[in-house]
Image (cartoon, rainbow, N blue to C red; front, top):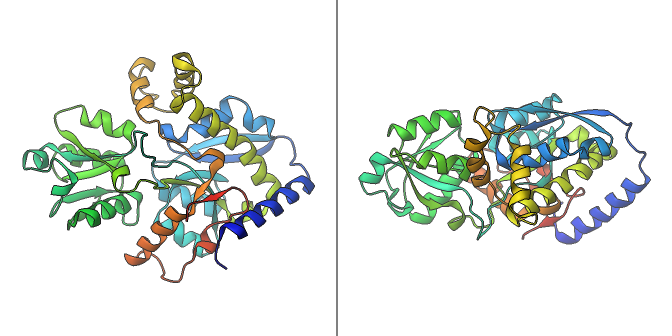
Length: 337
């Protein structure tokens, strides 16, 4: 089966009918929601803090992770129910095994919105790496093979005709340390990390990921196959999660509530992000991390298809894996080609 827009709309209609007919979940149904301590995970924080999960009948506990891969494993094992994180080779392999399903879209690169940045070490910058066009022969940091960092770096390299070495460093903190000390030459990361790192003399911003991947679906909303089959529970989760996205975008990007609205939202987010800093020191980084999250958790299928084809071209996943094994299109709108 191939996912088409007509097929998606039919499934959405069926899902809506099923949701109306399905019994309500038990009040206080317990869920664990996975998150990273990034601004981009704010919809989960908003839905919890503003009582949206509770209104949907859910008793939610947040569980925090350091990277995408362990989050995907926790979803597959049933230790966590729902999460939003980047596509990775590990996530796709779990989907092939029937363990998880992508049910929506999260963070997106969007022209005109300050998105992920491309960084260079000072040593590389002084040697002439002042733009991505000079990355040939350089070392690019990533957590693991098949990570979003690997994907972004490969796409940038392909566009620039550059041959780069990808250095796996497992954790974001290790990549930052390697970049500052010149052990790697370049990296790409969300703006709330990129801007503070580049504020010092050891690192420089040399470009934007959106120039190379203007419609990149950076993160997806996903769950276990078992939860995807439990329509009342998954619909309840999305019933709370989707308006939290709207609140976040309206407040932080469209600034519908002005400076006062932004300040109040920063207060909420600071309970979970940059908690080791005083509020005034944390606020600029939280604001710098603001990127559009797809309204209604809509999923850009074209971007997911491109990522899938890249994983396959790199030999990171089986060539026979299809989008239908990864995505359940019945919970939210599918956009893109």
